[in-house]
Structures are given as structure tokens and as C-alpha cells.
Length: 157
Image (cartoon, one colour):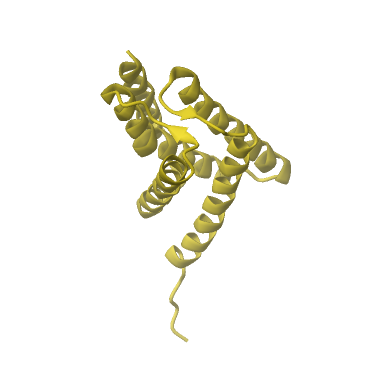
């Protein structure tokens, strides 16, 4: 049942992402998707294997649900947030997007905990928003650097 719920959530996120009119180049989407997936994979592995602050139950449905979230849901929503960021002009709307992004991902992480997909042990709640805000700031920096390289004009003198 949990696996079906996560498949539906991930399919909805993927469909939303596909239908969204993009402000990003296809290479940007790939790079940001890989960077976001890499960040969350490392975070999950670090907390699971090194610190033992995450536990993933030994049931295949929970493991697949966690896998789908790591590979599809979180990266897709991170790329969507970068897409939305490019359309915003004022500082306050960008700040509001950062707060909404942090709240959404913190809520998704704790929904995972509530449903039993990932169990937090010895985890302080404030670590989640700090991680997600830090991830978003890192992705913004990565996006800025990547866009400078991607859209650089090589004009001979």
C-alpha cells in the first residue's frame, strides 16, 4: 500500500515536471537533476550508514518507496523550484520561494517518517530545514555557475 502511494506521488511529480513549460535548457535540467539526486543520495547514505540517524525498514516496499523518492520525487521538485526561481524578480518573492521550498521538503521528509518509509532516530527537527535550505542555496550557486558556462558567448576579438 505504501509503495503504491509513493508510485502515485512520484508519477504525479514526474507528470507535473514533464508538462511544465520550462525556463531551463535540457542540459541544465539534467545537470540539476543529477546534482539534486547526488546531494540527497549522499545525505541519505551518510545519515543511514554513518550516523545511524535514519533507519529504512527491511521491507521491499519501503525500500522501493524510499528509492523512488530519492531518484524521482526530490530531484524533480528541486528542479521545479529552480525553474520557478528563474521566473521571480523581487527579493521578497525569492525569499518566499526559499521558505516554501524548505517547508515542502521538510514536510515530505517527515511524511516519510510518519508513514514508516524512513524512521528518524536521534534526529532533531531543525536539522531538516537547515539541510533543505542549504541544499537549495547550493543548487542556486551551482545553477549560477553552470549558466555562466553554458551561455557564455565566445566572440573572437
